[in-house]
Image (cartoon, rainbow, N blue to C red; front, side, top):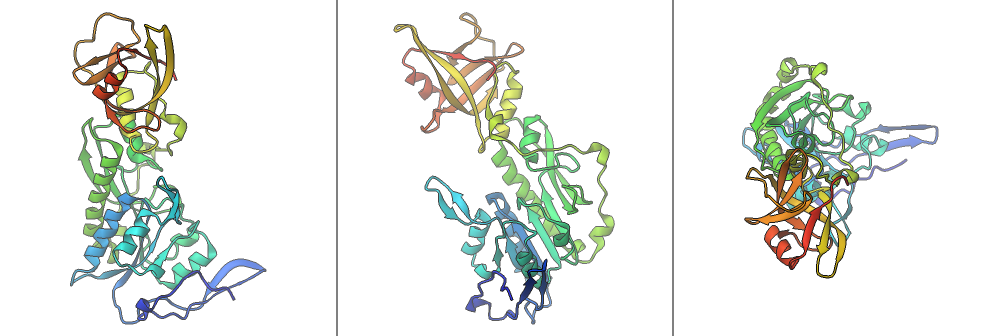
Length: 377
Protein backbone atom coordinates (compact mmCIF):
# COMPACT_ATOMS: atom_id res chain seq x y z
CA UNK A 1 0.00 0.00 0.00
CA UNK A 2 1.28 3.48 -0.87
CA UNK A 3 -0.30 6.50 0.78
CA UNK A 4 -0.70 9.50 -1.53
CA UNK A 5 1.21 12.65 -0.62
CA UNK A 6 -1.51 14.52 1.24
CA UNK A 7 -1.06 15.87 4.76
CA UNK A 8 -4.50 16.33 6.22
CA UNK A 9 -5.10 19.04 8.80
CA UNK A 10 -7.76 19.37 11.48
CA UNK A 11 -9.27 22.30 9.55
CA UNK A 12 -10.45 19.84 6.89
CA UNK A 13 -12.54 17.68 9.24
CA UNK A 14 -15.57 17.99 6.95
CA UNK A 15 -13.74 16.03 4.30
CA UNK A 16 -13.86 12.28 3.99
CA UNK A 17 -10.32 11.11 4.55
CA UNK A 18 -10.58 7.46 3.64
CA UNK A 19 -8.01 7.66 0.85
CA UNK A 20 -5.82 4.88 -0.46
CA UNK A 21 -3.79 4.39 -3.61
CA UNK A 22 -2.68 0.89 -4.42
CA UNK A 23 0.30 0.08 -6.60
CA UNK A 24 2.41 -2.97 -7.30
CA UNK A 25 5.76 -3.71 -8.85
CA UNK A 26 3.98 -5.27 -11.80
CA UNK A 27 2.14 -2.12 -12.85
CA UNK A 28 2.73 1.62 -12.91
CA UNK A 29 -0.93 2.55 -12.60
CA UNK A 30 -2.57 3.56 -9.34
CA UNK A 31 -6.06 2.56 -8.22
CA UNK A 32 -7.97 4.89 -5.94
CA UNK A 33 -10.41 3.37 -3.50
CA UNK A 34 -12.02 6.39 -1.83
CA UNK A 35 -13.34 9.87 -2.38
CA UNK A 36 -12.00 13.16 -1.07
CA UNK A 37 -15.15 15.23 -1.27
CA UNK A 38 -17.35 17.24 1.02
CA UNK A 39 -20.40 15.02 1.63
CA UNK A 40 -22.67 17.96 2.48
CA UNK A 41 -21.87 20.20 -0.47
CA UNK A 42 -24.02 20.21 -3.58
CA UNK A 43 -21.73 22.66 -5.36
CA UNK A 44 -19.71 21.68 -8.39
CA UNK A 45 -16.06 21.01 -7.63
CA UNK A 46 -13.57 23.15 -9.53
CA UNK A 47 -9.79 22.65 -9.43
CA UNK A 48 -7.54 25.59 -10.30
CA UNK A 49 -4.09 25.16 -11.83
CA UNK A 50 -1.64 28.07 -12.04
CA UNK A 51 1.87 29.03 -10.98
CA UNK A 52 3.19 32.59 -11.62
CA UNK A 53 2.00 35.80 -10.00
CA UNK A 54 -0.23 36.73 -12.96
CA UNK A 55 -2.34 33.65 -12.25
CA UNK A 56 -3.22 34.96 -8.81
CA UNK A 57 -5.79 37.36 -10.28
CA UNK A 58 -7.63 34.38 -11.75
CA UNK A 59 -7.56 32.56 -8.42
CA UNK A 60 -8.88 35.65 -6.65
CA UNK A 61 -11.73 35.92 -9.15
CA UNK A 62 -12.65 32.28 -8.51
CA UNK A 63 -12.48 32.74 -4.73
CA UNK A 64 -14.75 35.77 -4.98
CA UNK A 65 -17.26 34.11 -7.33
CA UNK A 66 -17.38 30.91 -5.29
CA UNK A 67 -18.13 32.82 -2.08
CA UNK A 68 -21.15 34.61 -3.56
CA UNK A 69 -24.48 33.53 -2.00
CA UNK A 70 -25.78 32.14 -5.29
CA UNK A 71 -22.53 30.43 -6.32
CA UNK A 72 -22.89 27.00 -7.90
CA UNK A 73 -19.26 25.92 -7.43
CA UNK A 74 -16.42 25.69 -4.94
CA UNK A 75 -12.66 25.68 -5.37
CA UNK A 76 -11.93 22.12 -4.32
CA UNK A 77 -8.16 22.15 -4.80
CA UNK A 78 -5.26 24.10 -6.27
CA UNK A 79 -2.43 22.65 -8.35
CA UNK A 80 0.81 24.54 -8.88
CA UNK A 81 4.48 24.06 -9.73
CA UNK A 82 6.68 22.60 -6.96
CA UNK A 83 8.59 24.91 -4.61
CA UNK A 84 11.79 26.23 -6.17
CA UNK A 85 14.74 28.48 -5.37
CA UNK A 86 13.73 32.07 -5.94
CA UNK A 87 14.86 35.61 -5.26
CA UNK A 88 18.37 36.71 -4.39
CA UNK A 89 18.59 34.55 -1.29
CA UNK A 90 17.89 31.47 -3.43
CA UNK A 91 15.53 30.18 -0.76
CA UNK A 92 13.19 27.32 -1.62
CA UNK A 93 9.78 28.97 -1.80
CA UNK A 94 6.29 27.98 -2.97
CA UNK A 95 5.16 29.18 -6.37
CA UNK A 96 3.51 32.63 -6.28
CA UNK A 97 0.05 31.05 -6.73
CA UNK A 98 0.63 28.49 -3.96
CA UNK A 99 1.88 31.22 -1.63
CA UNK A 100 -1.10 33.42 -2.51
CA UNK A 101 -3.47 30.56 -1.76
CA UNK A 102 -1.84 29.97 1.62
CA UNK A 103 -1.94 33.68 2.43
CA UNK A 104 -5.66 33.65 1.56
CA UNK A 105 -6.29 30.89 4.08
CA UNK A 106 -6.78 28.05 1.62
CA UNK A 107 -6.12 24.64 3.24
CA UNK A 108 -2.51 23.65 2.64
CA UNK A 109 -3.49 19.99 2.27
CA UNK A 110 -5.55 20.85 -0.80
CA UNK A 111 -2.64 22.49 -2.61
CA UNK A 112 -0.88 19.97 -4.86
CA UNK A 113 2.58 20.50 -6.32
CA UNK A 114 3.51 17.51 -8.48
CA UNK A 115 6.67 17.60 -10.59
CA UNK A 116 4.52 16.45 -13.51
CA UNK A 117 0.78 16.29 -13.92
CA UNK A 118 1.08 12.69 -15.09
CA UNK A 119 2.45 11.33 -11.81
CA UNK A 120 0.37 8.35 -10.72
CA UNK A 121 0.18 9.40 -7.06
CA UNK A 122 -1.02 12.87 -8.08
CA UNK A 123 -3.57 11.46 -10.55
CA UNK A 124 -4.89 9.23 -7.79
CA UNK A 125 -5.32 12.23 -5.49
CA UNK A 126 -6.83 14.31 -8.26
CA UNK A 127 -9.33 11.63 -9.25
CA UNK A 128 -10.40 11.16 -5.64
CA UNK A 129 -11.47 14.80 -5.53
CA UNK A 130 -14.06 13.99 -8.20
CA UNK A 131 -13.48 17.32 -9.96
CA UNK A 132 -16.13 18.44 -12.39
CA UNK A 133 -14.10 21.22 -13.95
CA UNK A 134 -10.44 22.15 -14.10
CA UNK A 135 -9.30 25.70 -14.89
CA UNK A 136 -5.72 26.39 -15.96
CA UNK A 137 -3.97 29.76 -16.17
CA UNK A 138 -0.22 29.73 -16.86
CA UNK A 139 0.22 26.45 -14.99
CA UNK A 140 3.42 25.62 -16.88
CA UNK A 141 3.08 21.86 -17.20
CA UNK A 142 1.77 19.67 -20.01
CA UNK A 143 -1.46 17.87 -19.14
CA UNK A 144 -1.53 14.24 -20.33
CA UNK A 145 -4.61 12.56 -21.75
CA UNK A 146 -5.20 10.52 -18.59
CA UNK A 147 -5.42 13.79 -16.65
CA UNK A 148 -7.79 15.41 -19.14
CA UNK A 149 -10.19 12.48 -18.89
CA UNK A 150 -10.80 12.99 -15.16
CA UNK A 151 -12.86 16.24 -14.87
CA UNK A 152 -16.40 15.39 -16.01
CA UNK A 153 -16.90 18.83 -17.61
CA UNK A 154 -13.39 19.00 -19.00
CA UNK A 155 -10.54 21.46 -18.57
CA UNK A 156 -10.59 25.06 -19.75
CA UNK A 157 -7.58 27.32 -20.18
CA UNK A 158 -7.10 31.07 -20.07
CA UNK A 159 -4.64 31.82 -22.87
CA UNK A 160 -3.32 35.40 -23.35
CA UNK A 161 -3.72 35.61 -27.13
CA UNK A 162 -6.45 35.58 -29.74
CA UNK A 163 -6.31 31.88 -30.55
CA UNK A 164 -5.35 30.34 -32.91
CA UNK A 165 -2.70 33.09 -32.95
CA UNK A 166 0.34 32.65 -30.74
CA UNK A 167 -0.11 29.16 -29.41
CA UNK A 168 2.62 28.15 -26.99
CA UNK A 169 4.64 29.22 -23.98
CA UNK A 170 5.26 32.92 -24.72
CA UNK A 171 2.22 34.39 -26.51
CA UNK A 172 2.43 37.88 -25.02
CA UNK A 173 6.18 38.21 -25.52
CA UNK A 174 6.09 37.01 -29.11
CA UNK A 175 3.16 39.26 -29.96
CA UNK A 176 4.99 42.32 -28.61
CA UNK A 177 8.15 41.25 -30.39
CA UNK A 178 6.16 41.19 -33.63
CA UNK A 179 4.84 44.67 -32.91
CA UNK A 180 1.14 43.79 -33.02
CA UNK A 181 -1.36 46.57 -32.36
CA UNK A 182 -4.12 44.28 -31.13
CA UNK A 183 -4.08 41.20 -28.96
CA UNK A 184 -6.44 39.66 -26.43
CA UNK A 185 -7.30 36.68 -24.29
CA UNK A 186 -9.07 33.43 -25.12
CA UNK A 187 -10.98 30.93 -23.01
CA UNK A 188 -10.71 27.51 -24.60
CA UNK A 189 -11.21 23.85 -23.80
CA UNK A 190 -7.94 22.00 -23.34
CA UNK A 191 -7.06 19.15 -25.67
CA UNK A 192 -3.89 17.12 -26.01
CA UNK A 193 -2.59 19.31 -28.86
CA UNK A 194 -1.05 22.51 -27.51
CA UNK A 195 -3.59 25.38 -27.21
CA UNK A 196 -5.68 23.88 -30.03
CA UNK A 197 -9.01 23.24 -28.27
CA UNK A 198 -12.39 24.80 -29.15
CA UNK A 199 -12.63 28.45 -28.12
CA UNK A 200 -15.49 29.36 -25.77
CA UNK A 201 -14.94 33.11 -25.90
CA UNK A 202 -12.36 35.76 -26.77
CA UNK A 203 -11.82 39.35 -25.72
CA UNK A 204 -9.77 41.78 -27.82
CA UNK A 205 -7.53 44.57 -26.60
CA UNK A 206 -5.83 47.44 -28.42
CA UNK A 207 -2.27 48.08 -27.27
CA UNK A 208 0.19 50.91 -27.84
CA UNK A 209 3.94 50.79 -28.32
CA UNK A 210 4.77 51.72 -24.72
CA UNK A 211 3.39 48.74 -22.84
CA UNK A 212 5.83 46.03 -21.74
CA UNK A 213 5.25 42.31 -21.38
CA UNK A 214 4.77 42.17 -17.57
CA UNK A 215 2.08 44.88 -17.65
CA UNK A 216 0.32 43.36 -20.64
CA UNK A 217 0.35 39.90 -19.05
CA UNK A 218 -1.26 41.31 -15.92
CA UNK A 219 -3.94 43.09 -17.94
CA UNK A 220 -4.74 40.06 -20.07
CA UNK A 221 -5.07 37.67 -17.14
CA UNK A 222 -7.28 40.19 -15.34
CA UNK A 223 -9.50 40.31 -18.44
CA UNK A 224 -9.31 36.52 -18.66
CA UNK A 225 -10.56 36.26 -15.08
CA UNK A 226 -13.62 38.31 -15.94
CA UNK A 227 -14.20 36.26 -19.07
CA UNK A 228 -13.96 33.01 -17.11
CA UNK A 229 -16.42 34.06 -14.39
CA UNK A 230 -18.85 35.29 -17.04
CA UNK A 231 -18.69 31.98 -18.92
CA UNK A 232 -18.71 29.59 -15.94
CA UNK A 233 -22.52 29.14 -15.94
CA UNK A 234 -22.45 28.01 -19.59
CA UNK A 235 -19.55 25.67 -18.88
CA UNK A 236 -21.37 24.11 -15.94
CA UNK A 237 -24.66 23.62 -17.83
CA UNK A 238 -22.87 22.21 -20.88
CA UNK A 239 -23.90 24.90 -23.35
CA UNK A 240 -20.33 26.21 -23.65
CA UNK A 241 -19.25 22.96 -25.27
CA UNK A 242 -21.99 23.36 -27.85
CA UNK A 243 -21.20 26.97 -28.72
CA UNK A 244 -17.39 26.64 -28.62
CA UNK A 245 -15.77 27.25 -32.01
CA UNK A 246 -13.14 24.97 -33.50
CA UNK A 247 -9.91 26.82 -34.27
CA UNK A 248 -8.90 27.47 -37.88
CA UNK A 249 -5.66 25.53 -38.18
CA UNK A 250 -4.67 27.46 -41.30
CA UNK A 251 -4.39 30.64 -39.20
CA UNK A 252 -2.46 29.11 -36.30
CA UNK A 253 0.86 30.68 -35.31
CA UNK A 254 3.33 29.57 -32.67
CA UNK A 255 4.85 31.40 -29.70
CA UNK A 256 7.85 29.29 -28.68
CA UNK A 257 9.53 29.58 -25.30
CA UNK A 258 12.03 32.44 -25.01
CA UNK A 259 15.65 31.37 -24.63
CA UNK A 260 18.19 33.44 -22.65
CA UNK A 261 20.51 33.77 -25.64
CA UNK A 262 17.79 35.72 -27.48
CA UNK A 263 18.29 38.67 -25.14
CA UNK A 264 21.13 40.21 -27.18
CA UNK A 265 20.25 43.26 -29.26
CA UNK A 266 21.74 44.18 -32.61
CA UNK A 267 21.78 47.87 -33.56
CA UNK A 268 22.07 46.81 -37.19
CA UNK A 269 18.31 46.25 -37.05
CA UNK A 270 15.81 49.08 -37.43
CA UNK A 271 14.90 50.90 -34.24
CA UNK A 272 11.28 49.69 -34.20
CA UNK A 273 12.38 46.03 -34.12
CA UNK A 274 14.79 46.69 -31.26
CA UNK A 275 12.18 48.67 -29.32
CA UNK A 276 9.61 45.88 -29.70
CA UNK A 277 12.12 43.32 -28.45
CA UNK A 278 12.92 45.44 -25.39
CA UNK A 279 9.21 45.61 -24.56
CA UNK A 280 8.69 41.91 -25.19
CA UNK A 281 11.62 40.67 -23.10
CA UNK A 282 11.13 43.10 -20.20
CA UNK A 283 11.19 41.33 -16.86
CA UNK A 284 12.79 38.14 -18.15
CA UNK A 285 15.24 37.57 -19.74
CA UNK A 286 15.65 41.28 -20.42
CA UNK A 287 17.64 42.73 -23.30
CA UNK A 288 21.31 43.63 -23.41
CA UNK A 289 23.89 45.02 -25.80
CA UNK A 290 27.63 45.49 -25.94
CA UNK A 291 28.82 49.07 -26.19
CA UNK A 292 32.25 50.64 -26.42
CA UNK A 293 33.48 53.34 -24.04
CA UNK A 294 36.34 55.44 -25.42
CA UNK A 295 38.66 57.56 -23.29
CA UNK A 296 40.22 59.93 -25.83
CA UNK A 297 42.61 61.50 -23.28
CA UNK A 298 44.17 58.19 -22.24
CA UNK A 299 43.71 56.72 -25.73
CA UNK A 300 41.95 53.69 -24.20
CA UNK A 301 38.71 51.88 -24.88
CA UNK A 302 36.69 49.14 -23.20
CA UNK A 303 33.66 47.08 -24.14
CA UNK A 304 30.92 46.71 -21.56
CA UNK A 305 27.66 44.82 -21.36
CA UNK A 306 24.70 47.13 -20.91
CA UNK A 307 21.20 46.01 -20.07
CA UNK A 308 18.65 48.06 -22.02
CA UNK A 309 15.58 48.66 -19.85
CA UNK A 310 13.33 51.27 -21.47
CA UNK A 311 13.34 52.62 -25.02
CA UNK A 312 11.30 54.39 -27.64
CA UNK A 313 11.77 54.99 -31.33
CA UNK A 314 13.47 58.33 -31.99
CA UNK A 315 11.34 60.43 -34.31
CA UNK A 316 13.32 63.66 -34.24
CA UNK A 317 15.92 64.97 -36.64
CA UNK A 318 18.84 62.59 -36.67
CA UNK A 319 21.91 64.13 -34.96
CA UNK A 320 24.54 65.34 -37.42
CA UNK A 321 28.30 65.07 -37.17
CA UNK A 322 30.50 62.43 -35.59
CA UNK A 323 30.89 58.87 -36.71
CA UNK A 324 27.94 56.66 -37.62
CA UNK A 325 28.45 54.49 -34.51
CA UNK A 326 28.55 57.39 -32.05
CA UNK A 327 25.92 57.43 -29.32
CA UNK A 328 24.86 60.94 -28.34
CA UNK A 329 22.89 62.35 -25.44
CA UNK A 330 19.87 64.55 -26.16
CA UNK A 331 17.10 65.74 -23.85
CA UNK A 332 17.47 62.96 -21.30
CA UNK A 333 17.95 60.10 -23.77
CA UNK A 334 20.84 58.16 -25.25
CA UNK A 335 20.38 58.20 -29.03
CA UNK A 336 21.64 54.98 -30.63
CA UNK A 337 21.98 54.93 -34.43
CA UNK A 338 20.28 51.84 -35.87
CA UNK A 339 19.79 50.12 -39.19
CA UNK A 340 17.77 51.66 -42.00
CA UNK A 341 18.82 55.21 -41.01
CA UNK A 342 16.69 54.96 -37.87
CA UNK A 343 17.59 55.76 -34.26
CA UNK A 344 16.56 54.49 -30.84
CA UNK A 345 16.09 56.49 -27.66
CA UNK A 346 17.34 54.60 -24.62
CA UNK A 347 15.79 56.00 -21.46
CA UNK A 348 16.96 53.54 -18.78
CA UNK A 349 19.93 51.19 -18.56
CA UNK A 350 21.61 48.89 -16.07
CA UNK A 351 25.24 47.90 -15.66
CA UNK A 352 26.03 44.37 -14.38
CA UNK A 353 25.52 44.22 -10.62
CA UNK A 354 24.20 47.78 -10.47
CA UNK A 355 20.78 49.37 -10.11
CA UNK A 356 18.69 50.61 -13.01
CA UNK A 357 19.51 54.26 -13.78
CA UNK A 358 18.11 56.79 -16.21
CA UNK A 359 20.06 57.88 -19.26
CA UNK A 360 21.13 61.16 -17.67
CA UNK A 361 22.78 59.44 -14.70
CA UNK A 362 24.55 56.97 -16.97
CA UNK A 363 25.81 59.71 -19.30
CA UNK A 364 27.08 61.81 -16.40
CA UNK A 365 28.95 58.76 -15.13
CA UNK A 366 30.95 58.60 -18.36
CA UNK A 367 32.69 61.86 -17.35
CA UNK A 368 33.35 63.02 -20.88
CA UNK A 369 34.17 59.63 -22.36
CA UNK A 370 32.61 58.74 -25.71
CA UNK A 371 30.09 55.97 -26.20
CA UNK A 372 29.85 53.92 -29.38
CA UNK A 373 27.34 51.30 -30.38
CA UNK A 374 28.43 47.86 -31.54
CA UNK A 375 26.36 46.48 -34.40
CA UNK A 376 25.84 42.74 -34.69
CA UNK A 377 26.15 40.99 -31.33
